[in-house]
Length: 290
Image (tube, rainbow, N blue to C red; front, side, top):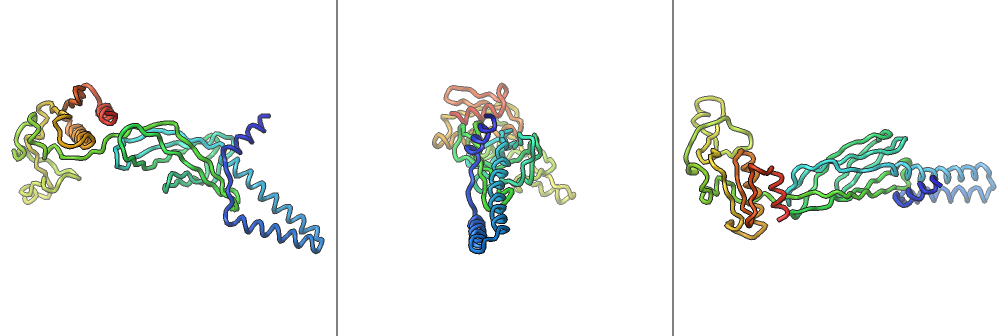
């Protein structure tokens, strides 16, 4: 009864589709049958049955090869709307025999696994892009395999039950350029403070050229307004643009404040999001669900 249940489950889980080589296999079997029938060659009959048996056994082996594979979601980096993010999964072989030569596909992206040992897990990371903020279900995956013979391709679909939170797109005016609405920042945008070693990725306009002329070390300019003297306050209703534009602007500022270790408070229609009391991800989650 257990074997019958397993076979039924395999039949429901794994599907088989012929490839272009299946026609060649059928042609070979028909040719062998015609040759054996016309000339009454027993050896040709044996060969025909052997080829048919190998093809049928290949189908069963291929279905058993994919059946024990299970996929689980491990983690995700920060996901922002309209931007690619990283999703990490673990693929596990839950059987006592190895699984061979298959691909895990999600859309155009595919990951090839030559083999997975019994009770072994392998991880892989894929890019995921979500158009809108909010909570989204994870995409489904499809496993394909030609093992052990390539006259048929076997498929198995793996649906994910987990969801991920996608933050608003980090877009808008940088804090440096939004100085006119940031009364809590000390100093004017052009008030020079000091120079520090240039960090890769900084704007080229920040380079302090006199320092470069004196030595081989590239330095960048720092300004008074960048000192986190006070807590910044961002009011959702006072920002320009539509709702999504405002949320994107707040997301950008949250990330900039995190990088600068600058405390801030967001007034989200009366709900206060304080960086001194909440983590950055908790604040971004509130913005994504607003």
